[in-house]
Structure formats: structure tokens, C-alpha cells
Length: 202
Image 1 (cartoon, rainbow, N blue to C red):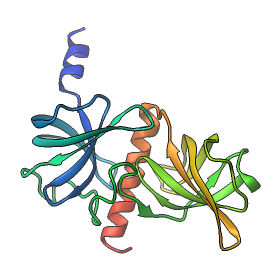
Image 2: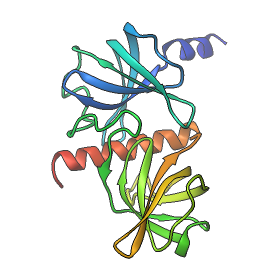
Image 3: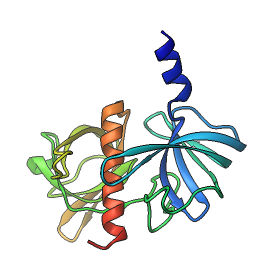
Image 4: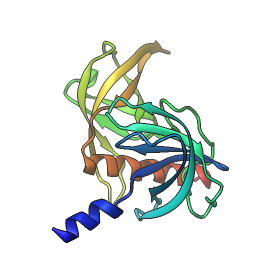
């Protein structure tokens, strides 16, 4: 009982999604109050480690996400580059979060041709190239293959936010929906790996 209480007391309140100098985006299960707040944040590293940092964040805005969580935007002058090797390009949009060029395969019985190529990937969604299109609002289970030794496959539920025909094929924007804890952890780890790869232009 005591261990459970301590776990809930000291577990991270939010995950760091993107950072640009002192400005950052956090994902939390509950909305953070606006203004200065002391936050326990989980920071994923490309090698799979997750560190918990306790920092004061000046929360500026909060927005509800499709999966039921919240994107909290604010400033933190206590962060250093060593603390958060998350995003080289900075914040590319609060709603969709930072995106990273990809190229992995995705599979689903609901996809035209049963497979597609992930063109870019982020913690809240992805852009997929397929041989055919799907209607906006379509929900499907998707299997992603990062081809990493410790992350062979990720299973997510997604919703088609948009779909367009481009250069003889189709591209669609996908939003992750109601990810369980394990899938959320895998998505954030893979995004961190892509961010680090992009940082060093591998």
C-alpha cells in the first residue's frame, strides 16, 4: 500500500515531447495549471533510457489531444541541451507535435494493399503513403516496424485525419488514439530515436 502511494506521488506528471531553447511542449494525462508550476517530467533518450526531471515550467497554454491527454506549452529556463536531446528542429506545431522523417513499413488488413510506408512520425501521429486511400475518420489498427533490436514492432490504433492523392499514390495523416501505457512508451522511444538520428544527420 505504502509503495503504491509513493509510486503515484513521485511518478512523472508529464512527458517531454519537444523543446526549442527555453520553450517546450509537454504531454500530460491531466491539464497542468497555467502559470509557474513545478513539474516532474519524463524525458526519453535514444538509447531507451527514460529520466525523470523536476523543473519549474511557466505554462502558457493547454490543449486537449485526440487520445484524451493534454498538450501543455510553456517555458523553462532550467533545461539544458544535455537534459533533453528530443528535437533539433524545435516546435513544429502544438496540435501535431514535432515530426521526423521516417521510412518504415506499416501493416494493417484495413489498408489498401495491406501495407504502406510511414513518411514522417511523431508522438501524436504519422503521415502514411499507400497505394489507395481511406475515408477521413476511418479508424484502424496499425502495426509499425521500426526495425530496432529492442523495438521490433509497435501496435497502435489510429484515425485518418486527412487523405489526398499525390503523384499517383495516396498520402494520409494519421492521429494516434487512446494508446495504452506500453504503446505510448514505445511511440515516444521511437520518436526520440528519430530525433537523435536527425540531429546527427545519420
